[in-house]
Length: 250
Image 1 (spheres, rainbow, N blue to C red):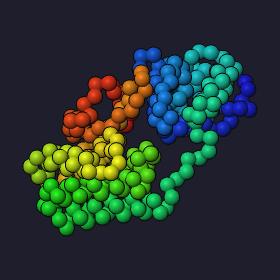
Image 2: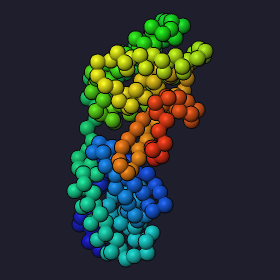
Image 3: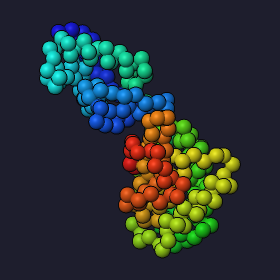
Image 4: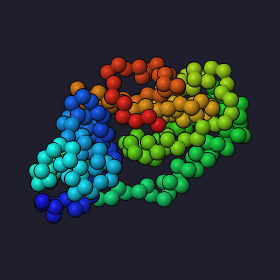
């Protein structure tokens, strides 16, 4: 059994998501805006690699699952891994961690938001406050370059704290209105990713457990983001039936 090329660990890229379907699966490369179809066996291999299995361990499981000889499974593994490398779908090196100063900035922003929430508990629901905070979030996304960095935006939204205060009446409508005005007056075009992230963070500040959802359509390839509360889309601009594949819920 040729194991010389199977002793390392191949880790899938953090920018790639596998969405299962009846044919096997679809790889969605968010960073490079492309999608690739996988057979059932290829999707099985991807899941194993994503779970941390070494190439040799994956080849053994592949042989058991497909009822082929270990030698055949090894050859197929090497061909598949080589194709993934050429398509830049694997991490060739360990992923870089977020610099310490950026971690400090993000945590400081979260802490500052909590302080404002406690200091102006009821004022934060006013239209001026909401507009100011919506505009500030859009600016923060630009200053931290989160417009182009999906992974950092992912952690920024996921770790945004949920306020323990009871929601004020019409909180969702107030937040959406504030975001709409902030997008109109913001000097740059606001994409759906920024918009949904800002809506999610503001709603959590208001005590509403909102989620940012990222979806995609495969033909033609495009990604889309929106905000949900209790599984219901609350952003009137995001109700797009062309994005049935859900990639992430934050």
